[in-house]
Length: 358
Image: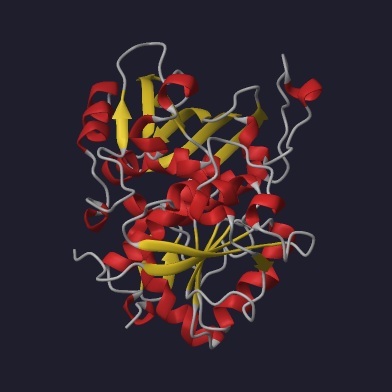
C-alpha cells in the first residue's frame, strides 16, 4: 500500500447535518484527504459554514468555519471525491448527477445500496465488492461512481457475523436492536418522547437489516453479488443513548460452533487484508469482552476511535445455536467513518488514481 503523494480534494454534501458534521470532524487533519468544499440545502447556500451550522459536538474546525456553503450541484461543487450525508429524500437524484458528472460519491443514503451494480461495502467484510464499479460504469455510462456504506445497525451485525459466517455458515438470525438517538439525526427524537422511554419502531430499519445483510455477506462473482442464504427476523428499537447501536443476536449455523470455537474465530479475525493499516482502520476491528456486562455504549463506543465493533456475551442459545451482543458507534463506524474508510480502500487499491491532482 502506498500513501497518496498529494492530498485529494474532497467535498461533503449535507455538511450542516449531524452526519455531515461527523465527516468534517473525521476529515480534519486527514493524511490523504483535504476538505475544500461544503454543500447543503438552498437555505444554507451562500452563508459561511459557521453561520449556516448549529454545531453539535466539540469545536468546529477553523479551516472549515469560513468556507462558503454551496448548493449540492456538480456545477457548484468541483471536488472529484464527494462524501454524501444527504437524506434519502434527496440523495438519489443528487448523487446520480455527481456520478454522471465524473465524481466519485461515497454515500450514506439507502437509495442505491441494494442496486445490483452498486457496491455496498464494509471494507473489512467485503472490500472485494468494489469490483462492481466496472459494471456500474459500463451499464450506466458514468465516468464517476457511487459506493455506499451499510445501514448503521447492519454494520454492527455484519461485522460481528462475517467471521462466523465464513467459518460456520450463518443460516438464520434473530436480532433486536437498541439504537442511539444520534441515529435519528438532528433535532431527531423529541426529548419528551425518548427520555425514560423505548420506542419500538424505526421507519424502514427492519427491512434494511433483513435485506442489506445478505448482500454484504454475499459472494462476488463475474455476474455480480450472489446473496448469502440467510433468513433474518429483526426488531428495531430507539433507546435513550446518545451514541452506540447495540444489537442482541441469536444465530443458527450450518455447522454449529461451541461458544469457545466462535470466540476463537472472532478474536483471530482481521478481515479483508488490504484494509489493514489504512488511516481510519481500527486494529483490531473486533474487540471481544469476557465480562458479562459488556459491551456498553458509554464505555465501548469510543473504542478504536469509534471504528471498532465490540462483542460480548457469546453463549449457547436455546432456540438456535449461539447468542451474542455487538455494539459500535453509529455515527462514526456506521456512517461518516465507514464512508471515509471506503474511500481510503479505494485510494489504496488504485481506484482513485485518476482523481489525484497532478
